[in-house]
Image (cartoon, rainbow, N blue to C red; front, side, top):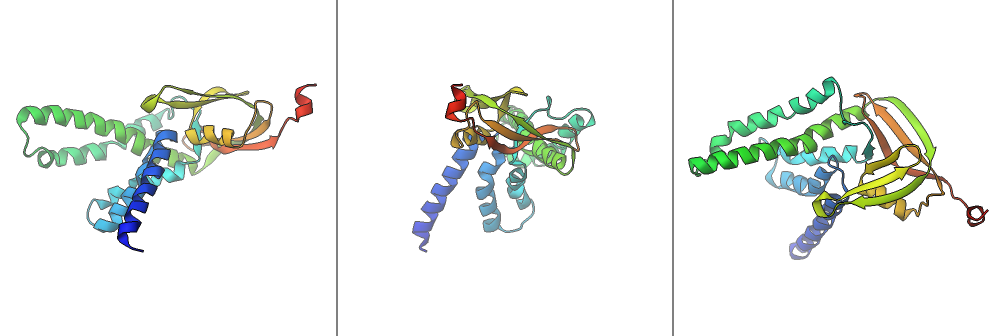
Length: 228
């Protein structure tokens, strides 16, 4: 196929893919929005030093089925410290390349931009790197796994734009924040408050409890039952 035709098609496909993940993802799923771009850039530039960083978004695909984290905070005990320790290599790499990044800037601009980028780097690394790694490790082994038969009585969205979050109210769990994929799946399946669903709850090896996958419809309440 002619590249003049293929490239716009691939570009449009990437925009749609990225938009869906940006709108619907929880923080640990969000790096998947850039997976096609990172993979394409890695193939284009080749396996050169540090180019492996372009493949990092692929890891978030493996935690895509973590639809909601029920533990608050996500990680507790010694794992909560590990969550920040995993950021240190990124910070070290940043400081090792600090002079190269701001080589042509004035002292004032270097200080202001340097501090700003450092905080941004820590923030992004926390949610897009260390959280993803720990959730992936948490999935390796389940300490506990339960099939919860319940009802999803309500779903709602709070905030707008970048602050938008998706929520569902589950009879036995209350109102919880979920991914947009979980939220829209309920609408796609037309699950009503009267329907019985099965939700998979898992507690992983790091002690974090989460909803795995999407709700499975067990039974629908018939039209006659609703008015008895």
